[in-house]
Length: 367
Image (tube, rainbow, N blue to C red; front, side):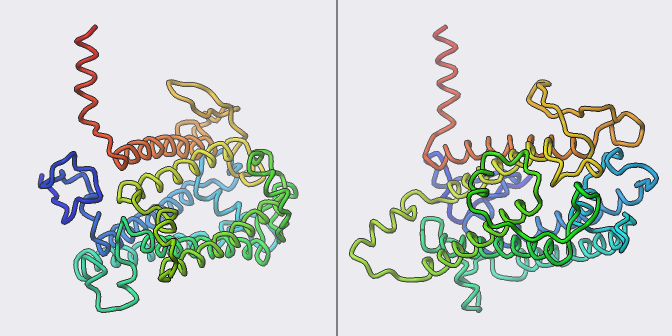
């Protein structure tokens, strides 16, 4: 297979080789200093996720047996839709209404995202600095420029905040499923800051949808406010005698492509592990009727979550509940994401992993 030679390997660990090349599988190297290609990979990945969501929803719907409890059938996508109040008729009975439409919309969006990825990969400039659109040029990649990274971070946070606010409004206007009453109901958020603070370390037993929505409302406010601050701070030239100190505060001298990749992997890994524990135990956000009974924790070669009852009825895939599949997948993905964080963080700090082999050989020979 071919090799990839990054246009500028300054912001990646090259072990002192200024003429470094990477094998084809080192995909990150091809987008390290090409913001256009970076956007292309993001769009393409989003298309893959949308395709997976749409196709798997249709697959689960094709094998779903409405005469049996959903939680006994080892499903993942249908329970997520049901828990946010989708697929029910006006009487509150699960019928799967609208599920096919949602799946088809995701499949159509996957094509749109895929086309966007191809356009950015083939037609549009490989670097946003070459774009003829002034606004697009603001999203160039300058890994060691705190203002550039702050500006991009701000826009990410704003979009995340809008998504949280959208979910809060969906629960307030449309309603979500409440396992306490076995029906979909409208939920108003409880913006209790003391509750939100306490739930940081005690979220497994949360039993109030109002509290759940309150946490999302607070998060939406924080993300949108922080996003606006970062977007403004990243596009403003600060006239300050202590500008150098301000730049250091923002990360000047610490930022690189691998450092930011390590930060991202740390966040993804931590969220995945939190989601794994939450899904394994909580029955308010993850109702028993959709996901199956709460799980037990076990150690099978590695830490794992196991079903607390027997699902080997020939319906659930490999005899496991949807809760078991969801929790274990998130835990394993989070574990490897954290390993990736450590790997790239050490490389960003300049650690030479090639020295590890020589040190291990020295240790072995000395014994």
